[in-house]
Length: 207
Image (cartoon, rainbow, N blue to C red; front, side, top):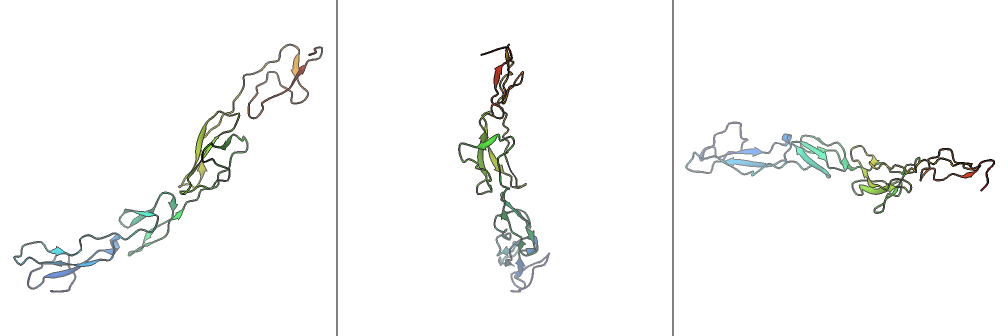
């Protein structure tokens, strides 16, 4: 038995050159495995037998997945750069932690939802990727969730709240705006930001 490396074209026999050495190519992203091509059929004319059943790719680092030969990508919710060194991978994948989510202040139209509510300052990640929000009193009654975007690192919600607006009010005869927080003529009231105004009798009127 000869203990030599198999060439590109090799002819084995059952007498003078019964085997040659093979190995998985680490430069192509496979684990270091060695084996033999062996000519075992004494009648000849048959393909040699290889002792390696299949070459196994080098394991990707934790929280990453092999997507192509010698190419590992971080899993959803993780970020990092993974490179193949020729025998192994270097680099790590770390958990993406999104920027803290705060409720809008002006207008203060969004508040925590009814279930798994956001509380303001919520830090979301793959371990806790969402919290719920809804429109504040005085706004159209809708709800949605705040979601951590693992690509941008931002916590966002598609929720848009529209303030409820009353129909325009026009003064009647002998009515005018009050001295404090007086109404205009005509006056449109908004339930959240301007819910009331005062009226009084105009000069020459009483009531």
